[in-house]
Length: 170
Image 1 (spheres, rainbow, N blue to C red):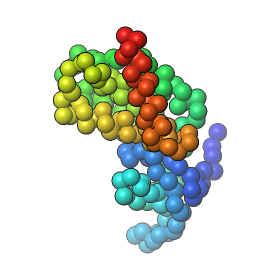
Image 2 (cartoon, rainbow, N blue to C red):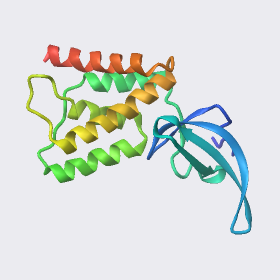
Image 3 (tube, helix red, strand yellow):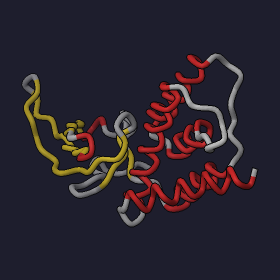
């Protein structure tokens, strides 16, 4: 089912895989190398960054709408699952986590949060583990907030409670 070229419009929140949730502020035409190109102008307020994505490349780069409520529910369910930690070397696992975070797939991001979450009584995380965990947690929180009531604090609390309920059930 092919959608129209402009399935996104100004004021829509979108997910750009490498950067997370942004808001389309406008659609503008720019001349690039002698060609007129229509661009989505996307603001990532938290990162104080603006991204211009050619409208005809949006799908190709993996830009998508916010997750539907059922996907958000699945992501929260994923957080409740048992952490799956492979026995591979950390560098290999870190690479896989990074790919999941940058995939823009909410379930994959929830898996990273679940797998890297540490309860208070567990061993300390390494610096790189904590960096990946925080990056995944931030992406998850922002999208759940944007898909819900827009409040990141509430979304963060819901995620934390879900992770802690898992830890106490174990």
